[in-house]
Length: 134
Image (cartoon, rainbow, N blue to C red; front, side):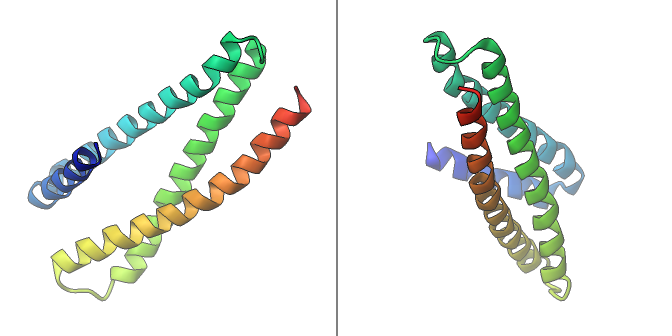
């Protein structure tokens, strides 16, 4: 499975490199696909507790919406910060391939950092929210 994800990433970079006009559509498709997978797993995570009767329907919906909002927040912050830092870091690079690779690596590192910070903060908020209403 990891090989498939890696190959998908390589194909996306190759398509963006060879057909720059398709980059925005491919990026949006990949982003929506990733979001759909995340929402599916969030739903599955809370569904079992709801089926067992541990949480009410209102708490079930609240937990799902809360986590979806957290993912959207993390994705937005990671995209904005990653793009901004990659732009600053690659301004002086003249070779296009080097600029692309450096931009992707820097953007990914910034996104991972933002994701880590948001997940830590969001985890604490989620724990407090669940302990208040259960």
